[in-house]
Every structure is written in C-alpha cells, then in structure tokens.
Length: 182
Image (cartoon, rainbow, N blue to C red; front, side, top):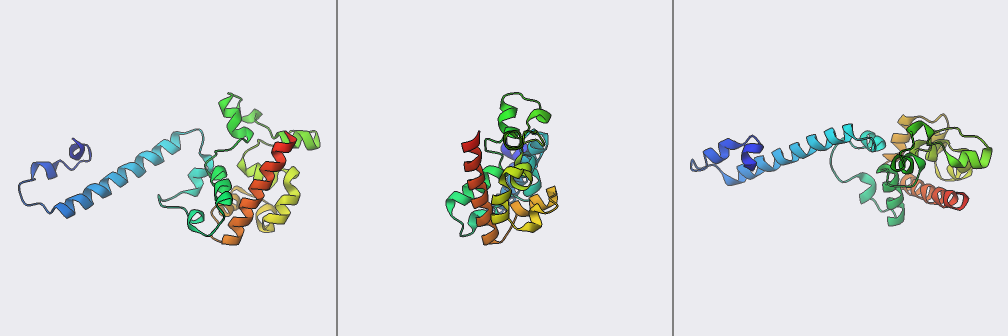
C-alpha cells in the first residue's frame, strides 16, 4: 500500500525482476522526504500561526543557530520566538479568540499610555519602546534603525555566533522585564 501511495507501485509489481534493493530504498526515502516537505509546506501555508517560521525556513535541515556554540538557554529563547512558542499577545490572544487587530502591546499601554502595535515577535524585538535600552545593548543598530520585516528575518537567521548570543540575551532579558511589568 505504501509503495502504491508513493506512486512507486512498479517496485511491487516488478519485485521479481531483480530490482536493486539499495536503489529502491534510496528512491523510497527520497519520495518520503519529498512528500513530507510538500505536506508540511502546505500545512504551514494554511496555518494561522507560524507566520515568522514561514519566512525563516526554506529547506528542512537542522537550523544554523542550533549547531553553533551558543548557550542552551539562548538557543531556547531564539527557538521560542522562531516557533511562536511564547506568551506574547499575538499567541495568547489567539488562544482566547481575541481578534488579531486587538492584540495590542500591553507594555506600550503600561509604559506610555497608548496602544501602538500588535504585540508580535517583530514588535517585541525591534519596535517596542519599552525594550529600547536592551535593544541598543544587544542588537546591532542596523536591525532596529529603520526596522523592517526583511531585517527581522535577517536577524533571526543570523550566522554570526556573537549576534545569535546577543539576540538570545535580548530575548531572555526582555521577557524578564515583560513578566515583571505585566
């Protein structure tokens, strides 16, 4: 059944015609990977979350920041942002059925008496004035000066160990500051 599902029914039908099992296994493995990638990309496209992840991952392999000599804690912080596994209102509001346009940053409201932007990962890392000092300390000016989604994706996809460590430190300290104030 699996061979038929993979469109490889000829392997079953011709199994007595001396097919090379190593070649067959390689073909099956490639077909399984291809089907997995295709299904996953389709699922991500139809998903209401994973907005950032869609921009960050263009191939299915172990991501750079996970194999570099970065403290585990910072890898975890970066992963939470990349995978939308955090308690920013963009996520918690989704669970509470709050319309997306009403998931406004509570830190902006608390600190400045105004709701400015949706509290998503982009706002949290590059925009929110509450974290300006942390941002200046840990993130290169290139990213937060005239920020854009393109720069945000670049930051989360950085290949420089120092930049990744600093991003992890920023995320950790910003979430600590947020938890104290909310």
